[in-house]
Image (cartoon, rainbow, N blue to C red):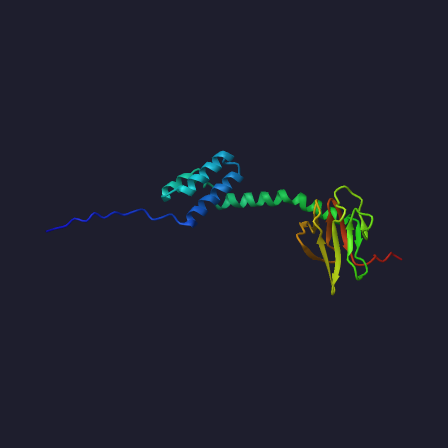
Length: 188
């Protein structure tokens, strides 16, 4: 007696790496303007529910032209586009008013619009109690006190406390300063 067994082969499950690669190609296509926002969202949904590699390949078949050269050109154009902003920041940083670090004392230097603060900044983007500057050992620590418009050090928003030093660019709201440890020596 011969028994017949049917052999069912199911397609292999798509890996997360395959889906991630396709999602990356879709993101790049949207960033390059090859896909509208709606098309991008629809193709992402289809990529997440696809069951076969052919389904994924169909989603990106019109986007994968160019390859390495195209990515290199887009990277170069992106770098060139960012150049004026870097020059503007460098130019502005040299022209910033200086903010001298105070002589270390037992109490922190409070910064804000309130007249009782050690450093009063009367600008509408500065909170009444905006930040505080303290010294711990040989390090200066700047802490945002829950200000509305935030405190930034070298362009990065401060969340909690951050160490600062001579030469750092510090912003309270839209008021920006260059920290300095001492007065510059006047020329003879």
